[in-house]
Length: 227
Image (cartoon, rainbow, N blue to C red; front, side):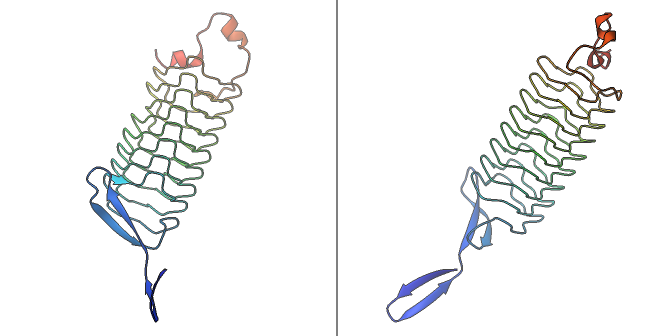
């Protein structure tokens, strides 16, 4: 609440946050209060919304429509986006630790350099997304569609069980201690990737040193998936 002072009286006026279209400036939604943090915005229609740099910690976007929205640099820590439509949305440099992204549709979204450690993306449809430079440490991406770019991403301890990484770009990614059991790995690019201690798609533990089989001239496990 804000207080407007005039001679002899005090007027009370509720504050509000206007969510606007990122290009036209049209107001898409009025939200009472002075922040969107912790607000219930379930099922809100926020196509092309400008939410860049906003404080959205703990905000509930369950099943919201955020297609083409700009959330560059936004703080979404602890937010709920399960079931949300995020196609082509921009999350560049967003703070997204411990975010619930279960079963989202995020085709073509950009998560470059986003901090997503501990986030849950189970069953998410995220093909063609860009996670270049993102922090995905201990993120749960099991059973998700991850045919994406992960150049130089930090994926230490990430859960990628049964994920679809067909054709994914993992050049320079750190997958140490990650779980890739039953993941689809055909035609992946793994140049400079770190896999120390990771569990491969066949359930084998990877090591820092080449296995005896590799010294005998056998192909690495990821090449077998491209056969």
